[in-house]
Length: 233
Picture 1 (cartoon, helix red, strand yellow):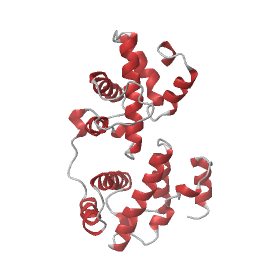
Picture 2 (tube, one colour; picture 1 turned 45 degrees about the vertical axis):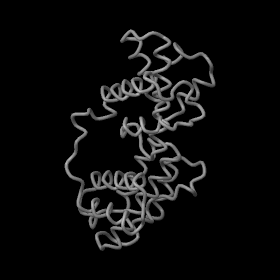
Picture 3 (cartoon, one colour; picture 1 turned 120 degrees about the horizontal axis):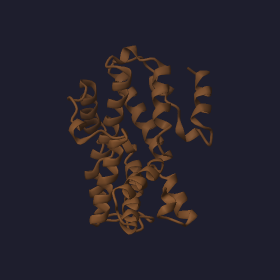
């Protein structure tokens, strides 16, 4: 469907290879169905691709899109391939439409369901510890706390019961939907949280070591890493 609006193979490759890539054909079809002109649709599709790359640099995935963070990024954007996707009303509205499209296909939660219960106590204490003892920046804390909360949501609120295989499975499932830079950040944040829990006596020692080390992966797929990790678990 992107071919309706873009003819250059290099541009098509760029759009489809980004974090938003798998959703852009569907978004293009939705824009056409809603009657947007070709010129407007091109702007919105570029904005959607730009949004995906910004989200990935924040260490997140498309399901975690934060339009406020994207809007702030646009104030000083120097992305080399924004190509009309910098700050203007088309960019902002296109990003909003793209997120709404992701809500409609079940990738993102609607604004009405974004509000969550208070974060787990261990995660709240981890946040304080990062700020007080590590001097972490707000952006780093946001990233680490988000990944820690996702881990607890997946494995349960009692880290003493967590198994190495479950931690690896969680990591690999997330990694399969992330770009390379996001996987590196995920590795770092999960290891930091698991080390924190071990120091506090909340989980067994050494669990941080079961998170695969991205820097040593090279080119193998996540499936290859899973096979190798089974021999070390």
